[in-house]
Length: 493
Image 1 (cartoon, one colour):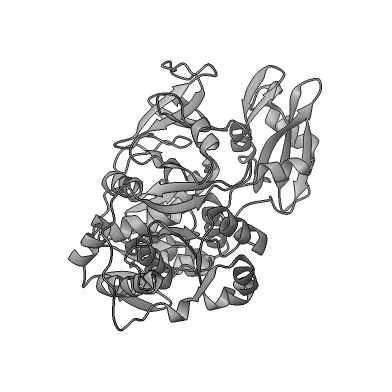
Image 2: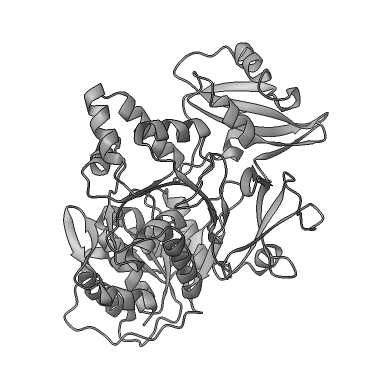
């Protein structure tokens, strides 16, 4: 049995999951996941890495399905509940999944597709209870465990294959670095088709004998209630969530604000990730809660690679240092290592947490690694006074204009300091003379005068970094993790 399940047995009487107003122990989770595994096996002794897709909202049932697939020897393929049918169909076709577990809310959406693709469809209600449980196979750590899809912000999503050993390394690295304890309780409001929700929150909690509470749909008032009732010890979210929580807090009466802030201070850890955290958001959250959000850096392919310190300095705008067991280097465009401070280069990562392969894409897998097995992240960073700072993704956040390499994230950080800028995104669009020109999209509750905004920005950054074109939008295009889809934004210009 894999160590995750052994540890669950050792915590059998503790509460593992709170979901839909009910509490479930680790023993209940083991029993229900064994029932899932029995149904999936259907008399065979091992699924032998069959791809099992499942479309289940964040809940106890989600975890039972995930664990059941693993315990039966299958590869878990979690589908995103917010994705439209064509996106779901793409994953089913790409993974060649032979089985689809579906919650009743999505049966009508997927029944016809399952029939057409000859995929075995299992309704969630028929899955979780079995009188007789089958013997479960012994699963080697090197076997494939999960396929998660890249966010597809720059190209067609690729299936990232992680082994059980990869997942265990990703979990244990964070459990150690962030000092998870059995008495911790965390609220999970993140999508469960991505490492942020699956690894950083859910799996770290369950590895530690701690408790994970699900809130299937984000609601700022409910989240603040949870943060303030002294039951949670940790909280993790994306920057857009913190922005919404700040907005809610600012609309409350002064007495309510004081009560919310005082109780939120009792948590021992708050983390922001999956997208760059604007420094004004970090500073405002610190004013409200006295928490300096812990920023970290990770990818679907590696789990988490760098992190600010749990106990030491958390420097705004930086993602800290490599986590235990993670080797990191910066390289220039020729592939040579960069050792000087304040010189930008591509982050390359090596270690046991790095994924096995892109599903059925050997050429893409080969291209993702150097000859000496470093994973090419495509993200640009520099080491600044002993800590790493992310400058952006080479393909969308690094704008090549007039011979300069310009970080869109740095321009966005400055724009967000303007009192009328609520949200913003900066991209480069093709230009015959300059290669690319800088353009900016702004979200604001007020009608903006872009000439005045540009003059304000000119006092803070060099002229070659100033946006040449502006647009005011009601919302920025985002994916389900809250990341701005910059290729979609470029089309607006």
